[in-house]
Structure formats: C-alpha cells, structure tokens
Length: 385
Length: 210
Image (cartoon, rainbow over all chains, first blue to last red; front, side, top):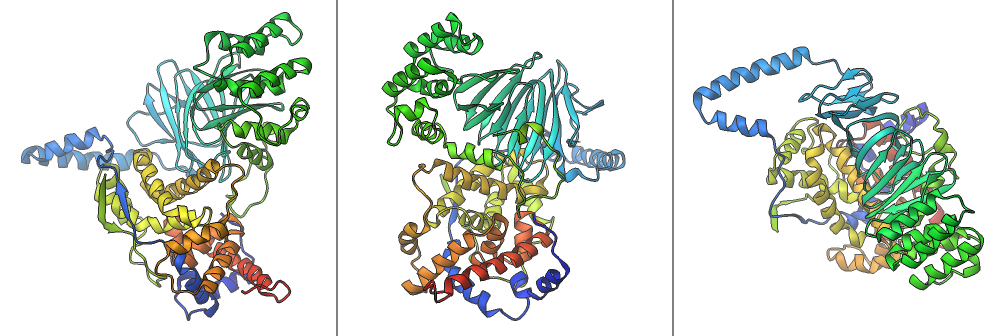
C-alpha cells in the first residue's frame, strides 16, 4: 500500500512512537490535533439489523448438529471428523507462494479446469494466478472470487484468463462463454477484455456473453457498465443491454423493455452499412418508436449518426428530453463533449464523470495506494483515449 | 427491525494496548459465527470494526452523512458474508466495502453538488452536542479535517483512524488488513504532509488561524 521508506526515514519513524501506538511520551502537537478532531469521532450508536438475519446454509453443519444430539452417533462423528481432519491436513496441496494476489476458484458443477488441472468439487478453493486460464466444458460451472472485488460466476463452455490483479485494477480476458459478475470494488476497478470490446465495471452486476465468433452481449442488472473499443463507447445502465462485434465494437445500447420494432431497428442500424437504405430506414424506425425512456439509445445515436442524420436524432431527442442549460443544438451537432456529458447526466442513468475519471486513470500513475505487484502492459488499456 | 442496543461501538481514545485485537483469533471465530447467522457475533463485529468504517468514510464523505453510511456498510456486508471464504480477510474486505460505499455516495450526488464540508459544518455542529470547543476551535477543527482530506488516500485514511478515531497503529493495521509497515509509513508521511499544510495555513501572509 505504500513505497519503501529510506533509512533516515525509518529512523525518524521509529522515534514517533506516540504517533504509532501512543506508547511514548505524548507529542503535544499530535495531542492538540487529537483534541481538536475528537468531535468528529464516531458517536455511540447501535447497529440496527433486519429482523431476519440471512443465514448461510451449511448442510453439513446441520447434519452434524443432529448427529451430535445422539451420544453414540456423536462419538462416531467425532472419530470420523478427527480422521477427516487428519487426512485433510496430510493430503492437502501446499499453498502457492504468492497466493495473496491469486483469485479463488470454486467448482460449482462438473469439472472446470485451470489449465489442464481439474478443480475438485467440495474442496477448498483453488487459486487462479495471473496468466492462468480457467475453462469450463458443457457440463461444468465455476466461480471466481476475490475479497476486494466481488464474485464472477462462469457458465458452461467458457474460457477466461486472469490478466492483472493489483490494488487499482483487476482484469480478466473472456475469450468465449458467459460470466455473471457481481462487483463491489470501486467503479473502474474491474475490467473484462473480450475479442470485440472492453467492459469496464462502473459499480454493478451484469452478465457478459461472448460467442465463438468474438461477438458479445452485455446485460446490466445493477449499476452500469462501460463498453469500449477503438474510441467507441457505450454505457449500459441497469435494465439495458448492448451487443458488440469484432472490429466494429459496441453498438447502440437499449432498454430491454423497448418495443420489438425499436430493438430490431437498433440491430439493423448497428449492422447495416452507413450509406445503405437499410441504415436510413432503421434510423427512421428508431426515432419514431423511441419513448422518453429510450433516450439512452438516442444519446448514443448522436455520436454514431453523421451529418443530417445527427440533426434528426437531436430533434427527436430534444423533444423527448429537453437539453439542460448549457447544451446547444450546434454544440451537440459538433459533438462537444462537455455538452454531451451534461445531457447524459440529465438522463439520471449514471454520473459520467466516473467514466471520464476512469479514462484519465487508465494510464498507470504512481499512487501511495498502489500495491507493489508488477503490472503487465495491457495494450487495450493504454490505447484508451 | 430489531435493535441490538447492547452492542454499541466503543468511544475511546488511543491506547497503548488494544485489548480487542488478538490477531487471527477471536475475530475469525466471530466472522464464522456471523456467517452461520449469529446475530450477536455480527453485532460484536460491528462493535469492533465500526470505528474503522467510520474513519474510512470520514476520509471521503461529509460528516453529516457518515452515521447512516456506517450502518449501510454493515447492512451491505451482512448478506455478502456468506461469500467470504477466507475469514481472515474480513478486515480488508469490510474496508473495501466502506470505500466502495463512499464512492457510491459521490456517484449519487448530483453533478453540480460539490462535496463541501464547510456547508455541512452547520449540521455537524448541531450533531455534536458534546462539543468541548468554541466556535473558533470548531472552525479550526474543520480546517484540520479538510487538510487531512487533501492528502493522498492512504495517508488520510490512516491519519483519520489515528487522530480522529483514536486507533493505534497496530489496531489500524489489524482493522484494515494493512501491514504494520504500511500503516507506519502512511502515518509518518501523512503527518509530515499535514504539518506542511498546516504550517502554510498558519503563515501570517495567508492570515490563517492554524
């Protein structure tokens, strides 16, 4: 969490025992600060818990408790338990030396593998290290977890690799398959590379699917996610989804409750070539079918449409969601980023400064918080605008 | 809703010896008990860790919102406890949830609403009935808190836990999951930077009161 101190600094630190553990004579300056700041200290307040506290279902434990209520069974259980514990400690594999940076992998079903090694069921979690790949076949599922990050459940027929794990960024590469991510790390920490886009968690839960041809789909269930490739960004809030294709990158996101005609038109707009009649027809359909709620898609269309098409999108968008103060027609038609950001923020779908912050922080910078794990250069990350 | 009124967080100053901390021992057992649905165990974890959560939040969000956010952090942690496979990682895990909750707090604040402790200070003073200080001292306290908050993340967190929450260095390490070395460095360097900032503010040219 910090850089190594120099020798003189070490000496000085060792003399600051009052600051460290209050074990030496009080330092008057620190005492004065303590006294000044005491009113900010936590007040005495009880924790209010829900009436029903969620319990963890340990079936084994429940069975054991029942067994222990019968004396003879209790004795047998004790012997079995002792044998089991002895065998466990005798046979368990030695821990990896750098397991602190590794992620836990648990077998949820079947025989998922790390490399060529199968992860056994009902055992302590295996470790996934940077550079290693986890693979599930048609009958297996696994979960990947990291205390500071959250949990990622891996569906059958998936293959992913752990690319980076340090204090500021956790990164995996999903080559194919489906993951369900529930992330509690700060927004911008968790990044997933796919063949056709990079998904950046902005505080949420989502499902990401990658097909064998490299195309993908992202559905957000909580918070929002940024989808990025080659300067093309899509933001996918809860309830929305977005497709992505190799070379083209993320398409227009849309809410899943949009009309079928709207959704079909979005797909057509994303796939048709820009000068084709199908492209124009799709845009007309999108604009006519759009509800105020679909302003998510219209906002993205502003940057995807060109020339007169962009003006049409502006007109429809402005009719559904009036531009906030500071946003002008000419500014939007010229793709003024600050105006686009203002209008996005007025939609209430997520604070875009989080994304801008992520863009800025994508270039590694020294920080007192940074964990001293060597960072592999990730071309797709450093290529961010 | 039920109130565990007997499980209150301690309000105490710095101690040379921390009776709550026995590394790897009682806290691990408490976490396991809480994972199995033991309310009292979770309440004890709250009693032991709420100061740490309070300090992490105080480093990042307005004082007037912190008490509610502390509760939020523990209520967010509760259903997720089942996912915590290594109970020894509970301190770092809980600290991460607290930091994440602070980030989430700012995400929900309207874009043109900037975090301003000055404007929040009126509420703060209303909420501190036991304030022992004059209004001048209170303003000075806010200025010191702001100075700490201007420090890099790691430094301000450690300093707030030490100077505000009254935790010792070893206790900060145990409660946040950091190493002793990291905490010692954070406190030392944070204090150096804080002294510089306060000295600048106190210089006659700026008319500062510190």
